[in-house]
Length: 243
View 1 (cartoon, helix red, strand yellow):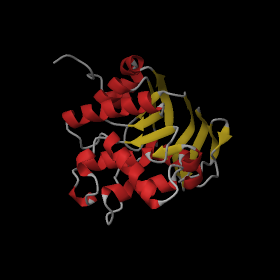
View 2: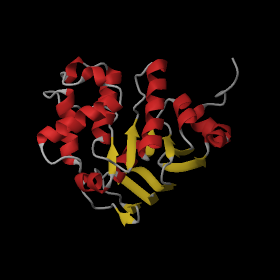
View 3: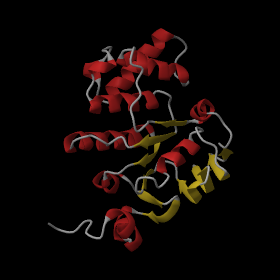
View 4: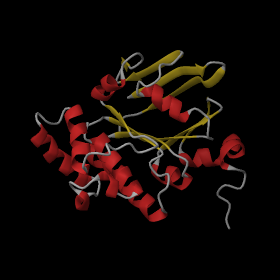
């Protein structure tokens, strides 16, 4: 469904990505992990049209995404959240999501968009926060709002950038259940960048590991946890040890 092939990117003299290749199959939940500075967010920015690769290809459903603007990629069926949540501060929760509904393909006018927006807010668990100022939300609820905004564009692929950062264990468990439901109920494919390893190992069916801009491993979570190079560079030799 989503194919990244030999993607390279540099900023000035700094090489950020070196011949990165992997695929995300339809209906999969795939994790993208690696140390800070390994190129994960840059890769997300390339996939979603915020940066253009210096070399390589990004394809979605057989169509090249390279050179398309972010709004064209969103309209093609890819949506993303951001590491720093970015709601429209002057709008209510409902109007934040309604803007995304209108941006996507789900409504013909503002009234219809607001109705759809309330449905998405309920879907992500914000039924008690309809039509409230976004400034009143907790961090966890702002992340749910960000997810509702992405889902409101009716994507086929959802890219999540560190949605678990700052959440406590109970909030993380609820977020894991919600992402599983998005895949199972809506058939949405998920690619997520994440540092919370217990979440990655519990949620993802495949994991891609970046280090210094290169893919050093990819496979099922159990194989990634056992990979000597991944443990040495990222997880730590004692990762998963009892006690």
